[in-house]
Image (tube, rainbow, N blue to C red):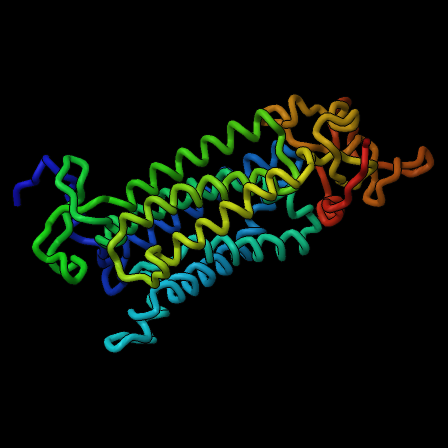
Length: 348
């Protein structure tokens, strides 16, 4: 079949079979997005002195909560597909067919992160500001799944960047059109831009108290408002705007208000004895721990002071120590300081 170079072709298949097991492109894109987000979050958290691989413990909570939240939001904003005259409520469970609402995923995913932070005793806003850069990158990768599913496109478009949609995937009433606005691609590019802006702004202003999250929410909401206005898939609407557009207005206003009202600067972890505590990035304690401009140098891990025992007190001279001495080498962090990671100290 010849390829029309005047537009973007859609993949001919979105499911491959490995024996009896279906391998779905949408699921692969979601998994890839989660992996990349975790990788970015782990790197950013380590440079702020967080325990190694704490992000995996957080993901155990955040990922399932995010998927459930995203699905519930999608069903709420597009109920006809499930509860309409030709709807099928059982399809609510068919997440692999597409349909995850980002606002719901972020909201419940945030609840999952909060629960994980409580379990690990990590400051929630500190963690949220650290991991937020990876979220829009994950969204961008996940949007490729919409391309494979030939869904979430916009109005008809005759341009070289228009996307071709097969007849079987066209929205009712648009069967005579073959190329459309690739709104999933617009959102993919917008999300990558959001990630870049939040990363640069956080480097410059050292956000704390959840302010990096608020910046992400504001920027994402602005992009989602205009992109949503191009889409033609069925959705609930009020006063000429789709429900997602109203939601975008609400979250943008709330996020901007939070940015203007909230105060707080970046926190990083340092050791006080054997306890990992959070302090301001520009405090003397942070400088003594080796932080440079609010982050540990690449490849450097936060380690407790040499000679600190599990209780956080220096080892007594009378205590017999049969371990080989290694001058200049700090002991590895034990499990105990990680459990106390949420303690904070006001350094003024």
